[in-house]
Amino acid sequence: MQSNYGEPSITLTSGKGIFVTDENGKKYLDFLGGIATNALGHSHPAIVKAVSKQIATLGHVSNLYAHPAGLQLAQKLIEITGDPTSRVFFCNSGAEANEAALKLSRKTGKSRIVATIDSFHGRTMGAISLTGQPSKRNPFKPLIKNIKHVTFGDITQMRKAVNSKTAMVIVEPIMGEAGVIVPPFGYLKQLREMCNQHGVLLVFDCVQTGMGRTGTWFGYEDEKIRPDVITLAKGIGGGLPLGAMITLGSTTPRFSPGEHGTTFGGNPVAAAAGLAAINVVEKNRLMTSARIFEKKLKIKLEVVRGVKEVRGRGLLIGIGLDGNYAQALAGLLADCGILVNAPNANTIRIAPPLNVTKVQIDKFVTVFRLCMQEVDRG
Ligand SMILES: *Cc1c(COP(=O)(O)O)cnc(C)c1O
Image 1: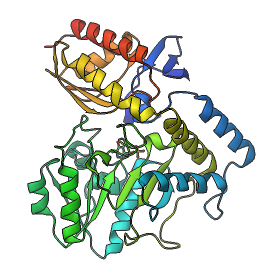
Image 2: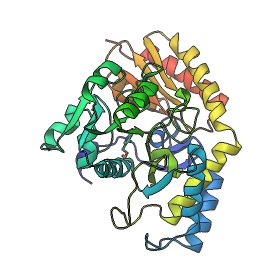
Image 3: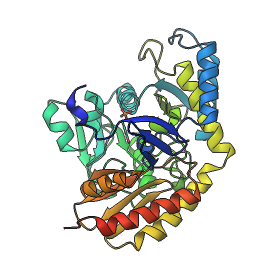
């Protein structure tokens, strides 16, 4: 393979629930969940059953034909947005979902876009243009023009940048790749009001914060507002490649026949997995337990020596450290049998499966505490 991912130090060969096993037979607690993707962990029986049944019935048909799995998943997504006028476009990844939103915004007849500094929206040319991280953008210039980046969580900066010539504003309800950064409460609502005032599309990139991870279906719901467009991927497929762009409201632009497409988007097998995952999250009340574990993790981790703050909602948690040793700590945790990652030099991110248990959470806290004692904090 190319070296764009560096050289991974671990090769995983199997997984069951929250556990994964590497080629040497070493077992790990997977507290990263494929980066907030394996909402139900590995080889969950409901996913295995849905996928097996679907691939044995109808595997792939292209988007020239409808199929029950796709229709049922779209119906379910519309239901959980709470807006019966919402409409779904399926794709395969977060970058593609944001590409779709970017293209859709052109249908307003305007082209100016405002996004946020440090945001992450994916790696394709459109998505990287929306992304606010210079290290990821700069090597690939020239990017798409007329995209301005302002400080996340700062409504004053946003108001200065946005006017009636703006086509769309795109933000993550919580910035995931930036290190799990939560905006001040009220920010998302202020964005909603500002976008209404100027007739601007408000897009929430819920790729990482969606599908129940933050304790609600989508990362913005605590502020009791809705965006015009939601983009999804990661957790939506229950571990299979699936993304979606959902428009809300009857006056939000939608794609017309021929305007956009993707061969694999909403493939029956991925759609069946997505539907199964949503049903398990709902039936087992996993969003409620995510909030309970959030409280527990915050209480237990905040008092660990070297931890500056614990950020996040539900089971998307960033542990802010008092120095730039996150990479070393992540390595130590892996040695001790726990997988996490370091989105930046002083943050450990955890995004365990939503069906993680109390015992596994306690185990994580214990091992984390031990590793913090051992790591060189500089
Ligand atoms: C991961 C991520 C993306 C990109 O998703 P891909 O499936 O890797 O293209 C976009 N937005 C956010 C918020 C993400 O966390």
